[in-house]
Image (cartoon, rainbow, N blue to C red; front, side):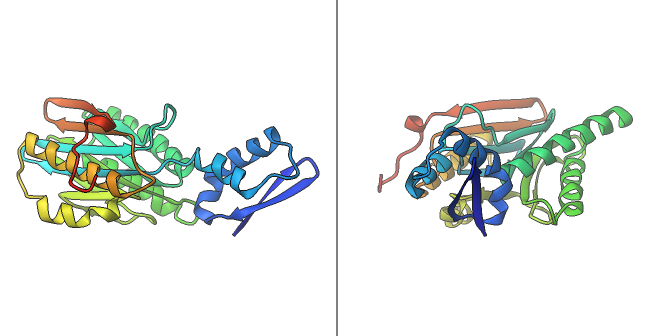
Length: 249
């Protein structure tokens, strides 16, 4: 579809934008035109401003023998965090329209908090994934958002679930997503093995993110690793200059 921006009495035909992105950038487009009252606005200037607000990333979830490792790398931003804690030991990562995903995770947090109060126990990971699935499925005509949900609970231990666009729910031991993920499917298939130790899992996930960042020209910056076990949650941050280097870099 085409995006039209109204600034006073001038309409700018910017460029073709995927419909799934339109609601996500509408506010930025309006603000950009109000603050740049220029009838000679060029496509290059507009694209530069727009791309500075769109963040691309790669994320992974991996279960190991005592817990679960969740990782994400993204173009550094002080305002956007795509690692969302929906309950004490349950995290999810967003994909698709950021506005839609934030709305869904906010609703999911409310549902899970209310559920834990009613049941007087922390929610199961499958319960969190099911809440996200129901929200996505019931609003599939309006939403453009998918999630990977992962965590630890006393019933099944570490678990990983994928909630795809439209609300499909699938359980997997390891899964990847984001713009950089297409470059590392081969690496993940070749190097992943069940019942890895914590150290093996950390190295596996760090290498996967580093490889994705090296190939994907719109991914990069900082790698965040979240280790979820029975004992709790541990956050690890790996700066870009501390990531592994490979032969082609």
